[in-house]
Length: 81
Image 1 (cartoon, rainbow, N blue to C red):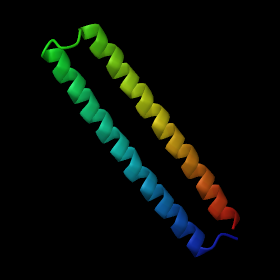
Image 2 (image 1 turned 90 degrees about the vertical axis):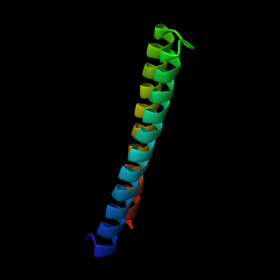
Image 3 (image 1 turned 135 degrees about the vertical axis):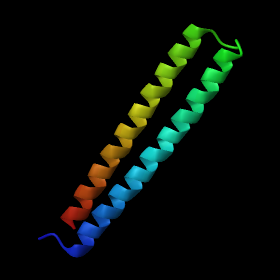
């Protein structure tokens, strides 16, 4: 039977996960802004900008997926206790 403490722990885990998702997205936004600025200033080519933006998105997706996996594992661990 799931107790109140376990439910509260899961809520905290989900809250932390969402905060971390937001933090990763903020880093992505800052990186994208920097890349766009470099392209606008002609310090990198449009192809380099596009390739870099895609790489930043790929890294963002991988990191969020990893955090979600860790969160699921932690929730399962909490529920077993």
